[in-house]
Amino acid sequence: MTTSAAVLALEGGTPVRSRLLPYSRQTVDEEDIASVVAVLRGEWLTTGPAVERFERAFAAATGVREAVAVSNGTAALHAAMHAVGIGPGDEVILPPLTFAATSNAVLYQGGTPVFADVDAETLLLSPAQVRARLSRRTRAIVAVDYTGQPCDYQALRAIAGEAGIPLIADACHAVGGSYRGAPVGSLADLSTFSFHPVKHLTTGEGGMVTTNDGVLAAKLRIFRNHGITSDHRQRERTGTWHYEMVELGFNYRLSDLQCALGHSQLRKLPGWVSRRRAIAERYTDAFDCLPGLIPPKVRADCEPAWHLYVVRLELEQLRGGRAEVFRALRAENIGVNVHYPPVPWHPYYQRLGYARGNWPVAEAASERVLSLPIWPGMSDADVEDVVVAVEKVLSHYHR
Image (tube, rainbow, N blue to C red; front, side, top):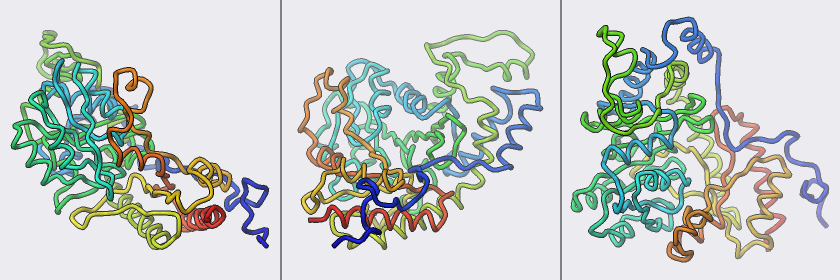
């Protein structure tokens, strides 16, 4: 007979938590607030010195010469596509298991996203599948560091080098991670980042592109500023009004207010990544032998940054589907989420002619994944609540 303690909240039992624990959220302290206030009291609210300070600090943290701040992670991806010259008729290879912004940026430039399947263990872009999708029209490869684990950059760089095309990293999940001792941000020709509130550090909304190529960095800076070669502060320094628009760009600038917040948050990044790793380790220890669930697989050559902790449900061992498990955990006040439906499954992409069934590994995984809460502000008690709730729900649904 089932005890009252094991009755799911979904079926009238007592939830594990009294309040919802979100899958992620920002952490903002008094130091962050003071940094923003200092800018408010200064002369420059945008195109000012706080932007340059944040860019220099981020470049140093990621081991590169150049970092270019932009208004969000999508802008970072779009700017990267522009910088490498993607245009109509060009193909860009990328994985289907990502957020739509990754491939949308290709479409913004008139290019064609070509989806290559993911590795069955890590759910990261498969180098073998990339090689199989190469064509005479391939102009770039985008590696997505899904959940915060770096891709196999040695293999992907070799493929890109042989094809004579750039490798771009969508590293929006992975700041603070490393691959073979090298920091994320330095692993591709261009690396893109997001500073949305659920990410490792936040500027409210914001993004960054890193590179060691000064020519690409100059293109990025012009593109983010309407295609104009100088910004207001640069003209103020030289005492001139003259400026030239040399190409069609966008207003993708990031303000000094946001950069001040990002710079302050960046100083805390190592400690926050360490906490994420500790939470991930506790989850893996708890779930490694839990029937009905597969913890994430991590390669030995990298250190993930753990933006997400994504488990896969072994549906063959469960009486319910992913939707039932999702609802049950939400009823226990555990804010699980799903990352992601395959991009080609979205109605817009279906209208473009992408047919289901071409990416069996990503498509099968997408119907089994659940993201568990993981963010540095979680207490040990929060983490244990997640463990208890997952064990409770999986035990209920196990065949």
